[in-house]
Image (tube, rainbow, N blue to C red):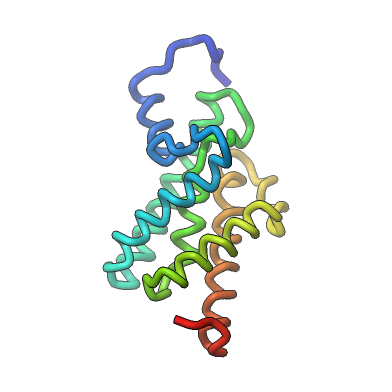
Length: 160
């Protein structure tokens, strides 16, 4: 951990810019929700990608997210800093993978993902070290959200 009074290097500032979802994690109320909204905008752009390219971007973002989260813990001298929201971005992207980019689906994904992220049924994953613990519980919540919405759509319990 570094001394919080030490000035951050440009590299540190870049890490924080990315890990905080372009500074959305500094939103004073519900930073995780703000990061999820950033993730929705990223999803809207990514929804045009083929499934292979989409999942490749998520895989790369997850690897980067683990690194950025680990470094952010060091820079901010905090365990799982609330301003780090790259995990929410990864979670919502997984929540909406292979789903039609329609308003009702996006809203359902947002609500279900936020409920699971706050409820934390995958809390055990938070015990993983560093960025692994930060990212993996949200990734699991995103995958669970996706499965819930896929099931609702398959059984025609959700109108689109």
